[in-house]
Length: 398
Ligand code: UD1
Figure 1 (spheres, rainbow, N blue to C red):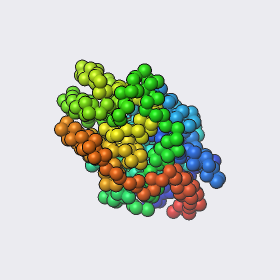
Figure 2: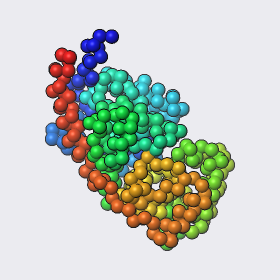
Figure 3: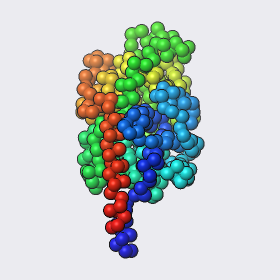
Figure 4: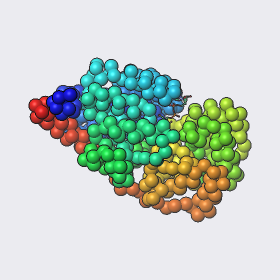
């Protein structure tokens, strides 16, 4: 291999009119991309974008409703990949995404979070020598049995600009040999969406009434439950005891459960759906964003295995019990309202009891979770892309 091959310019520099392709695939992506698209449009001069939905999530409850809640424009392209094994889903996104780059060109491909669509599109872009921009970089659970952990590690390795939500992310990236000059601490873009949408949040009582449930049952307060991590819900041996713990908590506090399709399917398969019957539970389908915000902000506590909800409860100042052995978002425990309890039923029940007795951790809002993260990303990325474009003639001569 000649030296010139080794030192070839790193990127295919697209004309500045080419868009930054922004990828969404699954529910937790929308609240991250919505403020970025808005900030790119509002930047002076505007940063052109193309919004691609991979179709990883496709049910109206998992997609259309959240798009409307967040004022996200309809995707310019929908790859309609649907569900499948990790390999099939990832491969299908890759196959269908590459022609989009051919057709539209790309100054950069911007991916968020850690879902399969994130990694798939980062891989395609990087092999086409298109800069990869990763929002929410550097989070690590140090648990490689989590599919998202694999997606995070590999996406960060492939990324050229890595935007972080908390400073601990920079230590994680350094451990993996990623140069610190690629990482930029911008704060949490999801909190931009939260702050902008909070005034429109739907109060829990209104939501329950609309769902035909008796809102008087939550007159003395309620808790909110979301569960969907494969490690918690894919085996009856794990899911059963967690549900039993929730049943116990529900005797002290009515629990509103927004049931993810994966969890519902598994509860049906294991013959356990009826364990959620009874006075202590109010079962709802997956909720829209404004409904979830309303539910969480009025709750006495939230029990969850979601990553995003650990952050949202910290931003809202609502106590959160995380039903996992680890978290990739340690700041929510160190500074926020989150308590990591593991999956043992007695630990879940004890944590909930403590919160009901004491009101839980007060917490504080972490640095740069201030509603202006997307503007910081737009300002930085504009300059970065500009610098790449000006550096290109020199790079080409190397
Ligand atoms: C995915 C993400 C996870 C994220 C979660 C939020 C990965 C590896 N996982 O997990 O990080 O927290 O989204 O929801 O990318 N299904 C439907 N309708 C849909 C989508 C899925 O019924 O619109 C059902 C299907 O049975 C599917 C199952 O849910 O097989 C799982 O969907 P999938 O996208 O594979 O993973 P999630 O569990 O949603």
